[in-house]
Amino acid sequence: MTINGPAAIMLAFFVVAADAQDAAPDQLAGTIQADILKEYIAQKEWCFPIDAGVRLQGDMIEWCTRQMPRWHPVSISGYHIREAGATAAQELAFTLKNGLTYVEEQIARGLDIDSFAPRLSFFFNAQIDFFEEIAKYRAARRIWARELRENYGARNPRSWLMRFHAQTAGVSLTAQQPLNNITRTAIEALAGVLGGTQSLHTNSYDEALALPTEEAVQIALRTQQIIAHETGVTNTIDPLGGSYFVEALTDEIEAKAYRYFAEIDRLGGMVEAVKRNYPQREIADAAFELQRRIDSGERVVVGVNSYTIEDEPQIPTMRIDPSLEGKQIDRLAAVRARRDGSAVEASLVALRSAAATPRNLMEPLLDAARAHATEGEIVQASRTCGAVSPKRRCSSSPRQRGAALFGRCPRRRPRPCWRRRSAGPAGRGCGRRRPPDRRARSRRGRRARRPSCRDRRTPGSTHAWRQRSAPASERYWPPAQPQP
Image 1 (spheres, rainbow, N blue to C red):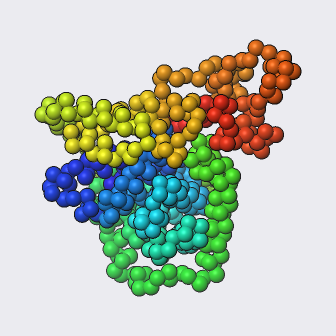
Image 2: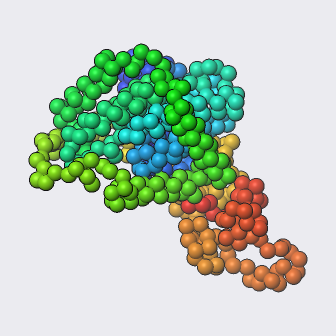
């Protein structure tokens, strides 16, 4: 399932539907994408603030590890990061760092790494730079195996393996001269195969204009089949291994990825880096530079800025019948009419209560799904005031607990800051009352000056503020988080 923000909710619906057909959770096999960090980095589709999103995803992975041993609970995705404009090195670094963050989350919950790591999967982009893409996949396998074996103590060789899916780059498709996209897709698909992908998706040539037509889908399928059965590239593993150029490019991309790892670690980890917009800024800068090169003609895109055609003929595109929307609305209304309203409300109340505790939320989500609560109702119930993170990550700060991981608590507002508005997080100020006379208080020896908002926000400052190690009474309102 390609779902991320409400992935745990969709999985609950899936499990309940299977149970209705006498299929137990431990019999179910499949993959759900559920890569929430890449949503905040690139895709920009989420239901909850980042801490809550990571907590809910962690609950789902933990539950699947214990209850669904054949299920792949996350597909760690670089595809959307690359589509947002990232370079190959950025796609590699941010994707793998997201994956390692999920590994750390599960280890912190007490799971053995070999109990879940073999079922982690990846999803990469196959862009048009042929050799760079092959080197990227080779570097990804190297880094993942090394990190899990040497830094996280995985002993099962299956935990070291990187199984990944590749999809040809949607962003490389052009609306101008769309038949050229058949060639682009074939080259990108071949790079994915030579790089060692376990599964492959080839885009249709008309997807820059609309959902694909049946003819376009068939050509995309035939592209895969010709590569698989006619070219002979599947006869050997890593056919370009040993090439000086490919090996040197692999080393170069790997070194770039580790430089990004070091910067993310310096910022406090991937979640903190996302809160500080570090990967988002890096991707935005790379996207701007790429577009500048295309606009200037420095980078040639055939049919767009070179070799163009005047009065280009239009191709037929897919049209969706708008009446389908009304039919779906009617189906939803029918479910709401025949369900037990009191059971729905009871399940949502139980979910609200569970969200305010450190317990795993999958069982309350399953109860809500059995009662036929809708996705929107479940999301809304999960965003209530008072939710906290799992106990091992729960802050001792009353203000941080009051921030409500599934949406800021409406009853706890930061107080206006007496310093200038830009001093505090997101321009809100620090949230403390102005002391009556700070100099007098210091002269009396009651307390020396505490670090200012700027001191606390600036890495490497004189005070070297670290929020986690500070006394609870001196903590600020938490840094701003992405809001839906």
